[in-house]
Length: 370
Image: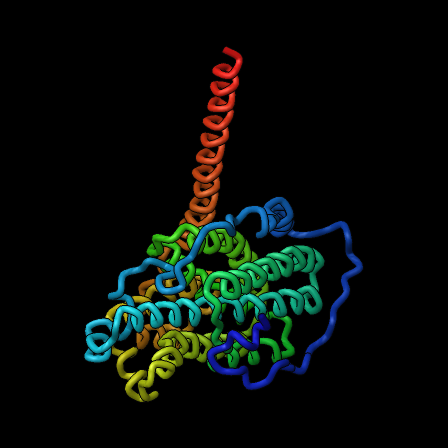
């Protein structure tokens, strides 16, 4: 079945064209590079994996309850709308919310793939080009995996959210080579990591947990790459240049915060846009979700040197300023360890099953010989 047949509403345009700006840069220095960045490039090569093999696609997913998360997380829970819904309606609502979330993940990963390719083209340093090339492959794998999950397990997709598309467009249209780093590696990737993590840690279903854990293992490297490259570069910029980047971050953070309400889902259930916005705005779960979504962005922004008074004031307004003191390195190392532990647990169980199967075959052979 064509993807377009699975969309809840057709995308505004089948192909979105963003005019390319800025220069393609070549470096003729092939024997030099930053040790930390080259080490990250090596790690990027070592950690490549195949989504067809590492993920167990034989696991079943119930489209009426794809994630197994509590109903309290749904915006309509506890409202008169919820009371009127049948169990079938509630299952359909869970399906729509999962489709909406994972569709935005999918569209964001395609954006990340394009941005990583743009970084390969525009960044002046060869060590950064090397790493970005590995990231482009990572993002292609992530888009492939999310697309497969939506097509095969959910059977429904949502178009890209307007605010996400707006931030992607702003990031790609800017001619300055550092902006794909800032828009993608810091803002979109940082927010995605927090969203992935919240679902990874609350889902009771093994397939989405595998997908999110393995994707997050890659994303931890990507954010580290953005931090390294931008921290070095922003030390060289003037106050005026830093303020321009801070304005971009402020606008992007408001866009990202406002895109997370899922109003599109409620509209598909016959709720008017304004009421859907009001319900989302007052949802206790979404209020917590919005705050946690900045747990990766705020400390990263502070770390790379964008921490002027106007930016701090915006974070006070969003209620997330204190997140600037979070230990980002610890969060990233935990992401990597969760994925590795998941592998150990899965493969230990598979090995145990194989040993039991061999023992059973030996026993049956012995009985037949007797």
